Amino acid sequence: MATALITGASSGLGAEFARQLAARGADLVLVARDQDALDALAVRLRAHGVAVEVLVADLTDAEQLTRVEARAGDAANPIDVLVNNAGVGLSLAFEQNDIADEVRHLRLHDEVPMRLMHAVLGPMLARGSGRIINVASIAAFMPRSTYGAVKGWLVQFSRWANARYGPRGVTVTAVCPGWVHTNFHERLGLPPGEEGIPAFLWLNAPQVVREGLRDAARGRSVSVPSVRYRVIRRLLPLLPDHVGAHLGERGRT
Image (cartoon, rainbow, N blue to C red; front, side):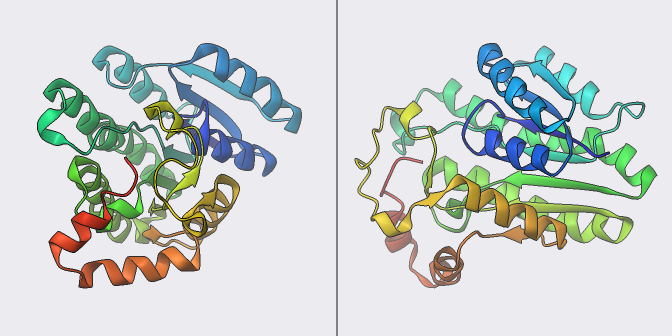
Protein backbone atom coordinates (compact mmCIF):
# COMPACT_ATOMS: atom_id res chain seq x y z
CA MET A 1 0.00 0.00 0.00
CA ALA A 2 1.42 3.38 -1.03
CA THR A 3 1.88 6.22 1.44
CA ALA A 4 1.63 9.86 0.35
CA LEU A 5 2.91 12.89 2.26
CA ILE A 6 1.09 16.10 1.36
CA THR A 7 2.04 19.59 2.54
CA GLY A 8 -0.55 22.33 2.76
CA ALA A 9 -3.07 19.51 3.16
CA SER A 10 -5.66 21.26 5.32
CA SER A 11 -7.51 22.97 2.45
CA GLY A 12 -7.56 23.78 -1.26
CA LEU A 13 -5.54 21.67 -3.66
CA GLY A 14 -3.75 19.92 -0.80
CA ALA A 15 -7.00 18.61 0.64
CA GLU A 16 -8.14 17.58 -2.85
CA PHE A 17 -4.91 15.64 -3.42
CA ALA A 18 -5.56 13.91 -0.11
CA ARG A 19 -9.14 13.02 -1.07
CA GLN A 20 -8.23 11.61 -4.47
CA LEU A 21 -5.23 9.66 -3.21
CA ALA A 22 -7.26 8.23 -0.32
CA ALA A 23 -9.95 7.16 -2.78
CA ARG A 24 -7.22 5.26 -4.63
CA GLY A 25 -6.25 3.46 -1.43
CA ALA A 26 -3.15 5.41 -0.43
CA ASP A 27 -2.27 5.91 3.23
CA LEU A 28 -1.61 9.56 4.04
CA VAL A 29 0.64 11.87 6.03
CA LEU A 30 -1.06 15.27 6.17
CA VAL A 31 1.09 18.32 6.90
CA ALA A 32 -0.20 21.83 7.65
CA ARG A 33 -0.39 24.40 10.43
CA ASP A 34 -4.08 24.01 11.29
CA GLN A 35 -4.54 21.11 13.73
CA ASP A 36 -8.34 21.28 13.78
CA ALA A 37 -8.66 21.35 9.99
CA LEU A 38 -6.24 18.42 9.61
CA ASP A 39 -8.03 16.37 12.25
CA ALA A 40 -11.42 16.98 10.62
CA LEU A 41 -10.07 16.03 7.19
CA ALA A 42 -8.39 12.92 8.60
CA VAL A 43 -11.70 11.67 10.02
CA ARG A 44 -13.36 11.96 6.60
CA LEU A 45 -10.47 10.33 4.76
CA ARG A 46 -10.31 7.32 7.09
CA ALA A 47 -13.74 6.39 5.75
CA HIS A 48 -11.84 5.11 2.71
CA GLY A 49 -10.20 2.50 4.92
CA VAL A 50 -6.77 4.13 4.78
CA ALA A 51 -4.37 5.14 7.55
CA VAL A 52 -4.04 8.89 8.06
CA GLU A 53 -1.24 10.51 10.06
CA VAL A 54 -1.51 14.17 11.03
CA LEU A 55 1.69 16.20 11.29
CA VAL A 56 1.15 19.79 12.41
CA ALA A 57 3.99 22.06 11.31
CA ASP A 58 4.78 25.57 10.15
CA LEU A 59 7.18 24.79 7.32
CA THR A 60 8.81 28.23 7.51
CA ASP A 61 10.04 27.36 11.02
CA ALA A 62 13.40 25.55 10.76
CA GLU A 63 12.82 23.23 13.72
CA GLN A 64 9.34 22.21 12.58
CA LEU A 65 10.53 21.71 9.01
CA THR A 66 13.27 19.40 10.31
CA ARG A 67 10.59 17.18 11.88
CA VAL A 68 8.79 16.91 8.55
CA GLU A 69 12.06 16.17 6.74
CA ALA A 70 12.72 13.34 9.20
CA ARG A 71 9.30 11.83 8.52
CA ALA A 72 9.74 12.20 4.76
CA GLY A 73 13.08 10.40 4.84
CA ASP A 74 12.09 7.63 7.27
CA ALA A 75 13.13 4.48 5.40
CA ALA A 76 11.33 2.31 7.95
CA ASN A 77 8.00 4.04 7.12
CA PRO A 78 8.65 5.06 3.53
CA ILE A 79 6.92 7.77 1.58
CA ASP A 80 5.96 6.62 -1.92
CA VAL A 81 4.37 9.88 -3.10
CA LEU A 82 5.43 13.37 -2.03
CA VAL A 83 3.12 16.28 -2.85
CA ASN A 84 4.77 19.66 -2.24
CA ASN A 85 1.70 21.87 -2.17
CA ALA A 86 2.12 24.35 0.70
CA GLY A 87 2.08 27.94 -0.49
CA VAL A 88 1.08 31.52 0.22
CA GLY A 89 0.60 34.62 -1.88
CA LEU A 90 1.82 38.19 -1.51
CA SER A 91 0.98 41.50 -3.12
CA LEU A 92 2.65 41.97 -6.49
CA ALA A 93 4.06 45.29 -5.21
CA PHE A 94 7.46 43.88 -4.24
CA GLU A 95 8.79 47.30 -3.25
CA GLN A 96 6.02 47.69 -0.66
CA ASN A 97 6.16 44.19 0.83
CA ASP A 98 7.99 43.49 4.05
CA ILE A 99 11.26 41.83 3.03
CA ALA A 100 10.91 39.26 5.84
CA ASP A 101 7.59 38.19 4.29
CA GLU A 102 9.28 37.89 0.91
CA VAL A 103 12.04 35.73 2.38
CA ARG A 104 9.46 33.41 4.02
CA HIS A 105 7.61 33.30 0.68
CA LEU A 106 10.82 32.21 -1.06
CA ARG A 107 11.60 29.60 1.58
CA LEU A 108 8.13 28.08 1.53
CA HIS A 109 7.90 27.81 -2.26
CA ASP A 110 11.48 26.75 -3.05
CA GLU A 111 13.59 25.78 -0.04
CA VAL A 112 10.89 23.63 1.58
CA PRO A 113 10.16 21.53 -1.55
CA MET A 114 13.91 21.19 -2.17
CA ARG A 115 14.52 19.92 1.36
CA LEU A 116 11.61 17.49 1.30
CA MET A 117 12.63 16.19 -2.12
CA HIS A 118 16.14 15.66 -0.82
CA ALA A 119 14.75 13.78 2.18
CA VAL A 120 12.61 11.35 0.16
CA LEU A 121 14.96 10.81 -2.78
CA GLY A 122 17.44 8.57 -0.97
CA PRO A 123 14.88 5.98 0.14
CA MET A 124 12.96 6.24 -3.14
CA LEU A 125 16.07 5.66 -5.26
CA ALA A 126 17.11 2.77 -3.04
CA ARG A 127 13.72 1.13 -3.72
CA GLY A 128 13.77 2.12 -7.39
CA SER A 129 10.34 3.73 -7.22
CA GLY A 130 8.65 6.92 -6.11
CA ARG A 131 6.65 9.89 -7.28
CA ILE A 132 7.15 13.57 -6.45
CA ILE A 133 4.57 16.21 -7.35
CA ASN A 134 5.46 19.89 -6.99
CA VAL A 135 2.49 22.23 -7.20
CA ALA A 136 3.66 25.23 -9.21
CA SER A 137 1.57 27.64 -11.31
CA ILE A 138 0.99 28.96 -14.80
CA ALA A 139 2.68 32.08 -13.34
CA ALA A 140 5.96 30.16 -13.72
CA PHE A 141 5.83 31.01 -17.43
CA MET A 142 5.25 34.77 -17.08
CA PRO A 143 6.97 37.72 -15.39
CA ARG A 144 4.90 38.02 -12.21
CA SER A 145 6.81 39.50 -9.30
CA THR A 146 8.39 37.01 -6.89
CA TYR A 147 5.47 34.57 -7.20
CA GLY A 148 6.27 33.87 -10.86
CA ALA A 149 9.96 33.68 -9.96
CA VAL A 150 9.61 31.09 -7.19
CA LYS A 151 7.27 28.97 -9.28
CA GLY A 152 9.62 29.25 -12.26
CA TRP A 153 12.44 27.84 -10.13
CA LEU A 154 10.22 24.97 -9.00
CA VAL A 155 9.31 24.08 -12.59
CA GLN A 156 12.90 24.15 -13.82
CA PHE A 157 14.16 22.06 -10.90
CA SER A 158 11.34 19.56 -11.45
CA ARG A 159 12.21 19.24 -15.13
CA TRP A 160 15.85 18.54 -14.33
CA ALA A 161 15.03 16.14 -11.50
CA ASN A 162 12.60 14.17 -13.64
CA ALA A 163 15.21 13.77 -16.39
CA ARG A 164 17.82 12.79 -13.81
CA TYR A 165 15.83 10.41 -11.61
CA GLY A 166 13.01 9.22 -13.87
CA PRO A 167 15.22 6.54 -15.47
CA ARG A 168 15.90 5.25 -11.95
CA GLY A 169 12.20 4.90 -11.15
CA VAL A 170 11.51 8.20 -9.39
CA THR A 171 9.44 10.70 -11.37
CA VAL A 172 9.12 14.41 -10.60
CA THR A 173 6.21 16.45 -11.96
CA ALA A 174 5.49 20.17 -11.63
CA VAL A 175 1.73 20.76 -11.76
CA CYS A 176 1.03 24.25 -13.13
CA PRO A 177 -2.61 25.28 -12.81
CA GLY A 178 -4.06 28.66 -13.60
CA TRP A 179 -6.66 30.24 -11.33
CA VAL A 180 -8.41 27.59 -9.26
CA HIS A 181 -11.54 27.86 -7.12
CA THR A 182 -10.06 27.28 -3.65
CA ASN A 183 -9.73 29.39 -0.50
CA PHE A 184 -6.20 30.46 -1.52
CA HIS A 185 -7.44 33.79 -2.85
CA GLU A 186 -9.87 34.29 0.04
CA ARG A 187 -6.93 34.10 2.48
CA LEU A 188 -5.54 37.16 0.68
CA GLY A 189 -8.79 39.03 1.35
CA LEU A 190 -10.07 38.60 -2.20
CA PRO A 191 -13.71 37.48 -2.35
CA PRO A 192 -14.66 35.39 -5.41
CA GLY A 193 -15.29 37.44 -8.51
CA GLU A 194 -13.22 40.46 -7.49
CA GLU A 195 -9.95 39.69 -9.22
CA GLY A 196 -10.84 40.68 -12.76
CA ILE A 197 -10.38 37.13 -14.03
CA PRO A 198 -12.81 35.98 -16.76
CA ALA A 199 -15.01 33.10 -15.66
CA PHE A 200 -13.70 30.76 -18.37
CA LEU A 201 -10.18 30.93 -16.89
CA TRP A 202 -11.22 29.49 -13.53
CA LEU A 203 -10.59 25.79 -12.92
CA ASN A 204 -11.96 23.51 -10.23
CA ALA A 205 -9.71 21.68 -7.80
CA PRO A 206 -10.84 18.12 -8.65
CA GLN A 207 -9.94 18.62 -12.33
CA VAL A 208 -6.52 20.09 -11.51
CA VAL A 209 -5.65 17.23 -9.17
CA ARG A 210 -7.05 14.55 -11.45
CA GLU A 211 -5.00 15.77 -14.42
CA GLY A 212 -1.94 16.33 -12.26
CA LEU A 213 -2.03 12.78 -10.91
CA ARG A 214 -2.58 11.43 -14.42
CA ASP A 215 0.42 13.27 -15.82
CA ALA A 216 2.58 12.26 -12.86
CA ALA A 217 1.64 8.61 -13.47
CA ARG A 218 2.74 9.08 -17.09
CA GLY A 219 6.11 10.41 -15.94
CA ARG A 220 5.69 13.90 -17.33
CA SER A 221 7.91 16.61 -15.92
CA VAL A 222 5.33 19.38 -16.37
CA SER A 223 1.55 19.14 -16.11
CA VAL A 224 -0.64 22.06 -17.19
CA PRO A 225 -4.27 21.16 -16.43
CA SER A 226 -6.88 22.01 -19.09
CA VAL A 227 -6.50 22.61 -22.81
CA ARG A 228 -7.00 26.36 -22.47
CA TYR A 229 -4.07 26.74 -20.11
CA ARG A 230 -1.87 24.51 -22.26
CA VAL A 231 -2.53 26.94 -25.13
CA ILE A 232 -1.81 29.91 -22.86
CA ARG A 233 1.47 28.33 -21.75
CA ARG A 234 2.63 28.13 -25.39
CA LEU A 235 1.65 31.74 -26.09
CA LEU A 236 3.19 33.39 -23.02
CA PRO A 237 6.87 33.10 -24.08
CA LEU A 238 6.01 34.86 -27.35
CA LEU A 239 4.88 38.03 -25.56
CA PRO A 240 7.22 40.94 -24.81
CA ASP A 241 8.07 41.14 -21.10
CA HIS A 242 6.08 44.33 -20.56
CA VAL A 243 2.97 42.73 -22.05
CA GLY A 244 3.39 39.56 -19.98
CA ALA A 245 3.94 41.64 -16.84
CA HIS A 246 0.79 43.65 -17.58
CA LEU A 247 -1.25 40.48 -18.01
CA GLY A 248 0.29 39.19 -14.79
CA GLU A 249 -1.26 42.12 -12.92
CA ARG A 250 -4.63 40.39 -13.20
CA GLY A 251 -5.40 38.83 -9.85
CA ARG A 252 -3.00 38.83 -6.95
CA THR A 253 -1.20 35.47 -6.97
